[in-house]
Image (tube, rainbow over all chains, first blue to last red):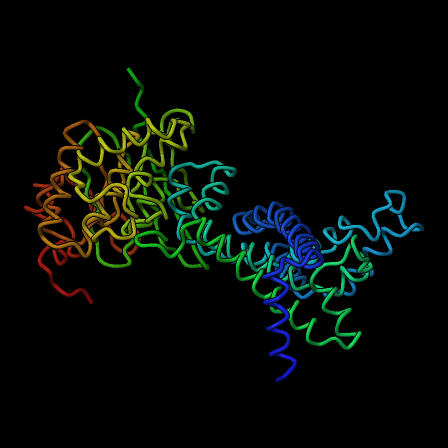
Length: 234
Length: 238
């Protein structure tokens, strides 16, 4: 218990003093995760909607694979991205390994299936409600998807937040492709792993509490900005 | 003058689902004006017939042919479902939605939607979510959404099911006004009294087939089949 109290104390101290090291890795965590979430949402949300609305050959298998990819092992993703971006790899010439960009790529691969799968489920339910109306009104395919994305925006925000939640807490893949380099690719999760390895459990816990607070703050901010759960809105 | 999409001709139309015939063969022509009421017991195919005419169902045999090109045919007909489809939008945006699909700007579409809402007596707060509407208001909202494109043909699938008498009277008044404005209406109902009040023509369905087609007065004065007679009299059919 002593470590937990010390962790809480240290977390408060780091926050109150706006410790420069903490600010740096927190900002990098947010930058990497939010960028990955935005890009993965731009891919996953329309993909989920497209799969929900269209009937095509092997659709059932595509959904099953998408669901299975939700459980992609981050370490394996990290390893694959590492191989592709390493000097000997096909994209080694880009020199992206051990940069925040490599971490963003790994996170996109991990969370896109999560966002696509959850949005597919949400849009599928909405499509069941809207199907006859949209066909009756002769909405084009593009109009149908746009309508479903707009009217399903609350559920889709949940999908995006699920992706954000997975990405902000991710450590395995970004440790491999980022390398946890101080002032370059260190983020909250890799710093926690490092401090735990060094035996400084209080500092590791303090960073953990800050990570949790950060995740809650981002979720709260999005809910407040989008006006969910307010009065007569849905 | 805009050319009509009528007549609609159904030629030996048949629908099968899971190897079972659910409609047909049905042959009929829809033309002229007025209100055609589709009557029949549960499972007789009333909803399926309306959906088939509107183009929501895949036909297995026979043909359904409107007059004119496909885009105009789609644009000039509308369907009101038995259970109103409530979009996750405000009442005004729900009503304006068909115009938004047509590319009308949001402001103009909402202005027109407010006019149509007023014409159907929708007095609820138009900026409130559609989900909060009462049963009667939901159906009025659906009607307003269907009417906003000023359709030439309007299909209604039991629009007054589960409504109280006051709401039913309001919906019927709207339908009579719509008919008088020149819209051809095809509507299914279980309610014999409503059929007597509204119909110009009756189609009576039994077991997926149109077994009687007549003017209202002739139909109620002397139904030509034992099934229709039993239905009118409220008798139990074996």
